[in-house]
Image 1 (spheres, rainbow, N blue to C red):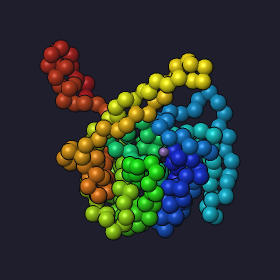
Image 2: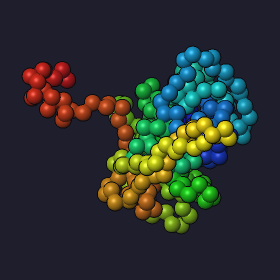
Image 3: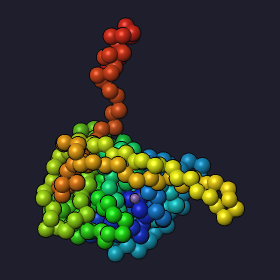
Image 4: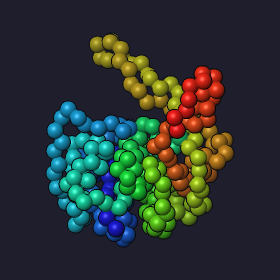
Length: 257
Ligand code: MN
């Protein structure tokens, strides 16, 4: 099994080390990751600047750091590390959750998405920490992925489909198992904060606090809030067939699929 690893926390991210440690039990692992943290870059790619690819020491594994984004790393990986293709793209383990709408902002998820676009079985992993200062329970992610990666890898995902996995950052003894969950709703309030610089000029800092209630039955948000690992299959086919039918009915335009 040829496994390509990437992330958005950068080549020095601890989650990448954990994922490499686990993944190498299942096959050949090569790593291509951003040279610095690139969280929240979504599916962006670098087009107007050269990508520099430097081999780095990574616990004996073939690894490269790239001055680019997770999508760049997957594509560089398929050129430099695995020119003949690979069987899996694993992205993460992200330090922080990728639940609900986080998926749309996440560089970690975008890494897996780019793998899926290339026709590769791809999985994004995130450690769902909610309190910034709290020590992350990487050992829970390591244990759960070690025990379950084979299942996730053996499963045949359809074309344009990939998996998003969130592991609650709690003690391994508190983990209650896993649930297949739907993408939930996770929104932020007070998104943009106005502040003043030392000269009294206003500037704005985007962040905000999360408004997330666990009262979302069947979702990734609910599963993780209740101590379960969430496994969410995502599709790159964004077409909404139901609405297509409604527009067709209202307009008399034919549906071409
Ligand atoms: Mn990140």
